[in-house]
Amino acid sequence: MLYRFLSALASIAVRWYYRRIEVNGIERIPPTGAAIVAANHWNALVDALLLGTALARPVRLTAKATLLEHPITRLLVRAVGVIPLRRMSDERPRGDGMVVEGRNAESFAAILDALAAGEVVLIFPEGKSHSDPELAPLKTGCARLALLARSERGLPPVPIIPVGLTFERKGAPRTRVAIQVGVPIRSDDLTAPSPQAVATLTARLDEGLRRVTLNFPDHDAAGQVLEVSALLNQLLDRVRPLHAPDAPLADAMRIAKRLEAARQLLPAAPGETVAQADAFLTRLDAFRARMRTARIPINDLWLSMSLVAGSWFAVREGAIALVAAPLALWGRINHWIPITLARWLGNASSKNPDEPAMHTLVAGLFLVVAFYLAVALFIGSHHGIWWALAYLFSLPPSASLDFWLSDRLRRARRRARAFVTLRLDPQLRGELRREASDLRAEARRLDAALR
Image (cartoon, rainbow, N blue to C red; front, side, top):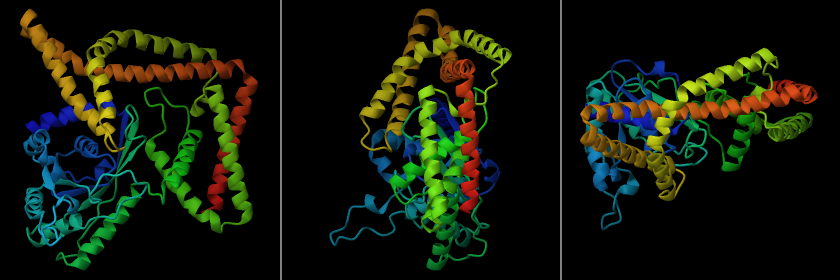
């Protein structure tokens, strides 16, 4: 019961913080039976919250044991059944400088018990949260557990399901997250958890995780590839409805993977191909600068320019704003103080890129719930319990509507400005559309040349 309640709270919190959470491949999570979900670890506690709320089945979470050192997090960890895991770096050396062996024996036993009960267990095999552009070397614990479940508990081979988390900007509110569920890793051909079997299964997991994550040799390469992939993702896209104005983040990931493969092939490519790639990037950068100057979103270039379409857009969006604004305003009034304070606390208390989202979400949960209760108690004492309950029930949907309407109105203003600019300047519209079409064709030619 407590898990379901906290899961509902966490689901609301992450969907208020992130504008869109895309989940792909969810059907690969088995509907019943034991399974291990192995995910990359980019954003501290937020990763567990996202996966715990996005996956179709209840998830038994694991977390670093240092969370038990704080009284609040210790209470939360124990209340929801989180299994603590101790990293090597968490251990204090003995007098001889060595750390205590078997530090996770009890935790491993608890995970095996959960698997024997047919649960889904979440593990972060990198063993740490980080901002590196590539997967960290995987620890062997995940593979060992999958093999121990078979050899010690007599379970059928437990699938390890690689899951990739990709953040548009992991610390920034109202951005997007993509959750990619990969093909389950099987261990049917492996039996006892021998060092060789563990190494083999860990290597399979590493390969599976790399298929659903982005990996670059350094931050410079990551920045260059991701910038170009985001631009190409818009350039190759179509006009989209306002409720889903962006091309899926998963599409940008696919383009980024292809770009990184092409970047690695360029040094060995013919000089003509290298020159074409350089010229293409120069044109792409100039096109982006021109679009920014004109303040036109790239995938709005192909908007219909008819007065009928423009009039219908204005009437529809105006009606939506008029109908939704009162309830959205109610949500804004009741949440502005706690959410603004949570964001300030999240940024002020963060010392590295892994912390802003986590600190903001934790502070937001506490402050919003405290604000709800304080105002509800005041209303209840002056007007009765039914008014207090009505007030409480109105808050989550009104806040969600406020976030949704704010995002939609922001996008509608940009689209209206693009429509007016393009309609009033047919020459600019024609030039930009021709350049976009040429860049699309050139991107496809370069892709074919570098395959």
